Image (tube, one colour):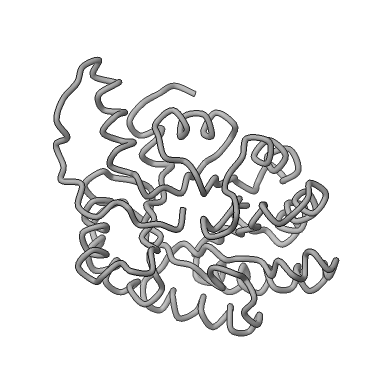
Length: 244
């Protein structure tokens, strides 16, 4: 990977999921995402209209969560969440699998759960990132989920919500990239807090990176590319969003 500003910034989904974030902090986070020209924001579902308004006219996509953070919602409720999020302006949906079903070996139910949201999203040209919560799963289950996501044409497989007991690990990312078909992309989320960590997961094949320390990562990248220290040009605003 050639290190450029876009090679990292356009992989970042700026996380705005912290339960205590206020409306003004969410708006500041969207403006930060626009100023740093990242790939997307991933914002709390009720605030999708706010993000769509702030980010209109930018290249930053509006994302939100489905079945978050534990994945235990009914499938029809997840589909309703997806439809309403798209009505409000979301173009990217990060959905959590039903982890209990995966642990119980209910793979047909897992498949239907993912496929229903993917079908709804693709019907309106939105994309779906499927969150596994790898900290609760073994390698065989992770590999099986990658295969299912390929079969139902999910757009991304994703490591974690950031609210489990662990986040993205290099071993899991290597496994997911190997197990997922080539048309399914990879997202690392949980624990990517520095530029070096972001570069490392990008080099493992991640097309997206969930991050809340976006400004710190990208300011360091600017400094590294410039070969000198400098003050950030953009106000950091609210960046410690949690959830990634």
